[in-house]
Length: 392
Image (cartoon, rainbow, N blue to C red; front, side):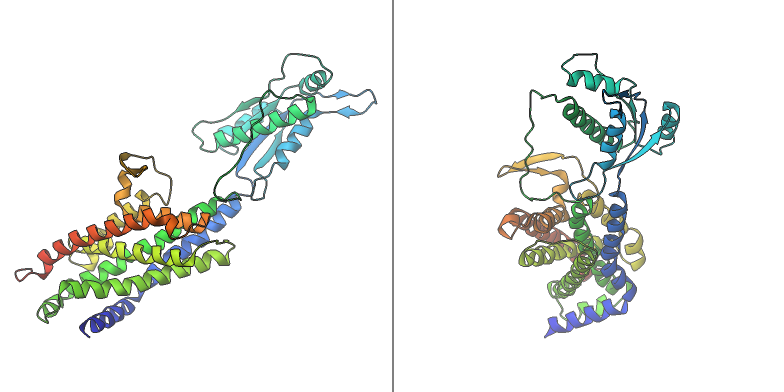
């Protein structure tokens, strides 16, 4: 009965602080829409090329003009990504000076210059000759993160096109195969697991606020003399936050599906990971709340642990592996001490690779153990600082 009253009290207080509640529930869905439209527009032509076709071409025996450089430009323009959409946006320039100016200004990621002998060389090879190779020059800025991928696409298309035209058989054939998912994932698909984890991370503010406000308002003294135990109080907070976490994840999932995300996931696995991750965030919130006294402290100092979770869990951008040790053949890295690191890994397996509960068993165990650790340390510190008889 006392637990039910505490749950009701905590729920009403979260509803009264509707601004924090709305921010918690809508933060991840907002970023889901933002990331979708960002990647959707970027995927239309993620790499920009300025091509200078200096090929002089030639006249065939039939009297028709032939320019292999123009055909190469068309091949670059028509290259498509596995998920659809052109991979290269090609700008044709009449001279190399103008193309290099575009590169210096950051307007393109790569400059490709087709030599004047391009057609003549390919035709000579096709006739069995061995003339000097035609040099297709490329220029790029190594400080541009898109440069290497643009060069890789350009080089691959150029090699493939010239081999086909000159009827050259290479000494090696590369057989590319994939494991896991059958279809290539878009960049947005790869970010979705991090967005789900972000939805759960936002509970840091509502959970910590539910704890800190009792100290801030001075009502913690009355709760202490009501024979309420620390366990009962934190359990009531956890129950409410797990419900809020489920709501935030459901809103994020609904938003992602509404804008075109195709989910092939085990619902039971998704629910279990979300529930455990929510409990883990409450455990971290208890540890954070043990060092803070006011809501103002939470909105300022409390943002620091939130950003640690967001950036060092590996959801926003890939992090280098800093290995500590190995368990059952799996490397344990420094950022694995954060339960949200395992949450993102589990979400990725469930949402993008069709994993079930058994497939993410390692992540579930890791989240559970870390949750127990954070709860134990957080509860001990909070009890000593705020729940003991001489706490102020």
